[in-house]
Image 1: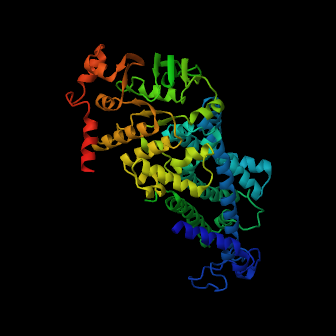
Image 2: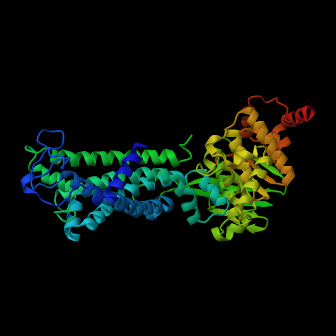
Image 3: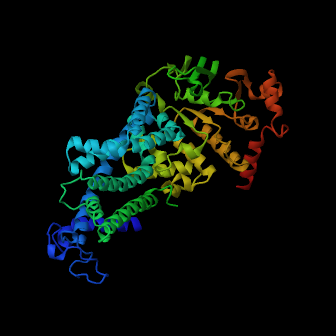
Length: 268
Length: 278
């Protein structure tokens, strides 16, 4: 429930952002720089969460950042999940040399430091939202692959798969009609977990200035800008960090909630 | 109906696999030959690890035999490809040992029961499907309304009946029942065995009944095959084997029955009592 609430709030904020935000996130107002949030003396009620060094409204920038974060979370996690699951299913189901090949590839993949690899990737592809998404897919498919492969192997040992053979189901039907529905609950957990990870990775990449164009508002970018003024205006860093924490917690709770709502085995 | 000659099965032993070398083969079944006649029920007994289940699964062609022949109704099925086997598969079915794992946990009971019929295109209309699944549930002595439940909502005995319903849905001629009562309490065991016998006479099933429990085999089967370490050590009619076993291993198995003096017709007695009450 909590997870769904956070997710819907994020989705709503992302969709109605331009209407919801009290100011243009890029509008500078140098006379009103470093205004504190509303509960501190000297705040301007027009800038609820204060302003940054250039007098830009923090709340508006956070709202615009939500759109980037959510887009990366949903698109990157879904595509990562699709790639990793497909490869993992095939490796677990067919075993033999397919499995050996995939497993060794995953091992090699995971030996690279993830952050470094993503920075290199983004540097090669060129900064931008699509580059962030591609980087997440290329790095994190192994996370899905390993877990799905192991679970597929477990399911293959179950008698219901043998039973599907005795009624003449083809390999494809066995894999997609019998086994896939049984790893779906696991996939939902992984997917929402990956959404949280994607938000963090996007924040890291925009922190180092490799995400969307540097003047656009992203949570990671806000943290990076706020870092310079952390002593005079700590709220510049605190709010985006809080956003990230809430989003990641929300995604994880969403996974648990979806599982118990849709899995007939858990729903007792 | 079924003729097995010189059947051998060897599977790779992955625990002994070293590096990139091919895993060494472990011989599971050694030179098995026997036949099962139409309408007969044959018991396969032996301690765990003797290869009973592997034999059952090989007869179902879940494993491909290493050598030897399995001839089902005049067709050699020992090395047929999956596509060639498909039309034959509806004629031989298996009831699995553990109904917990033999039913897809995320599919409703009714859907599991009619899935074989759907797979062979004998049912297309979903409405008809629910009706058919309810008929089959009644046939194995379960409430029709269970068809909308999931496997974990049923008891072990109920799940095993569902496993039987699924196996007979295609109206097969030959059924392998692999330790189907070993996980159940004694009264459910008796009920399942009576159900199996009733279905056997109603449908004219040919049955291979795998069990480690000789008293169960004696109650259900006409003939018995005794296995040890993947080999047949003794075979013959139930009466013969039980009265004077030739092989020491068989005698040991018989003496291991907790109540060796139980009347071999115990299941009939229960039937007779029930009829009186009913």
